[in-house]
Amino acid sequence: MSGYVDADGHVMEDAAAIFQFLEPPFDRLRTSLNILPQGDWFHTPSGRSVKTPPGAFQPADSKKWTDFMDQTGTDWAVLYPTRGLFYGRVIFEDWAIAYARAYNNWLHDAFLKDNPRLRGVALLPMQVIDEAVAELRRCVRDLGMVGGMIPSNGLAKHVSAREYWPLYREAEELGCVLAVHGGIYENLGFNTMSNFPASRALGMPIPLLNGMTGMMVDGVLDRFPNLHVGFMEGGTAWIPLLIDRLEREMEYGGLELPHHPEEYFRRGQVFVGCEGNEKALAYAIERVGPDPFMFASDFPHEITMDNCMEEINEILERDDIREEHKMLILRENARRMYGEPQA
Image 1 (spheres, rainbow, N blue to C red):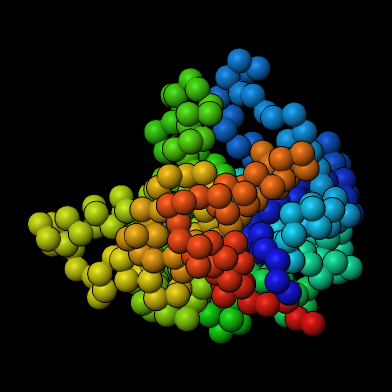
Image 2: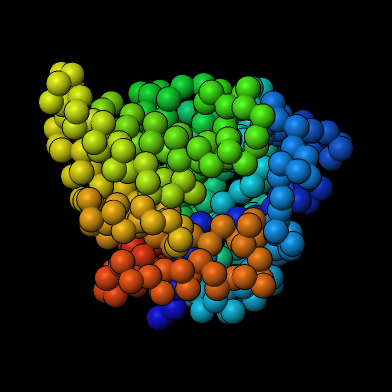
């Protein structure tokens, strides 16, 4: 393989198809039900405040994903959910377990089992941590997935809470990834903001900053040093901010860490999805080196077949990033995070 690797693509969930994989007693539910919490219900988007590019957010099946990869020269891609990004807000524990299993079985059946170029990230019912551990093990061992997703916002407790440590232990033992993915902006101070795009601009990176900070200061990354953790779809500008603020607390506020904040990004444990046009990427590389950063298309959300090369070309054409770093971002770092597909 010599092409690119897409570290963060998406599926658009087919509720009717997922319901075919529900196990009793939920297999009798109607697909017309609102099966997952709404995302940012506190906004009322309008055509004036939310504009979607033509062709964006169109469902892409396995064939359309293959066409996208062929057109972009991508060897393989990793698939995350869309509606499932709101999954942390599910309150009914039994439903969280049942839906996660159904979603994961649907993802495997519809995208993964006949297409080795597509790799899946499991939905995990973190509402019941023992069930999340068991589901991660099943999805990695039996369904061949690369790991599990942690919602960046919406869980009952902080992602670094000790209640979740059994999941981190299991992922480390399995040698798989856990990826914190942005997507829900509720209760971040945006509930009274009237403009949805503005809340999204900040709502993606702030929970990642919060999650990474907790994993550092609460000891997750030191307790599980072989765990690969991803922070997806929030860009990279939050990284220098996190480092500078923690450095200040270490100097003046009494914060103690086993390692310097920059070191947590440099030691090959933490990976971050990046966007090709963000000016902050070059400075983030200057601060922590090029190894954490991975190209992420976000297809089929904002990226369409018509502009599919946009993100890749934005990286290739930059003159503020060294040439030898570009293929790390476009390919090698994702290979290190997720591991190579089995032949």
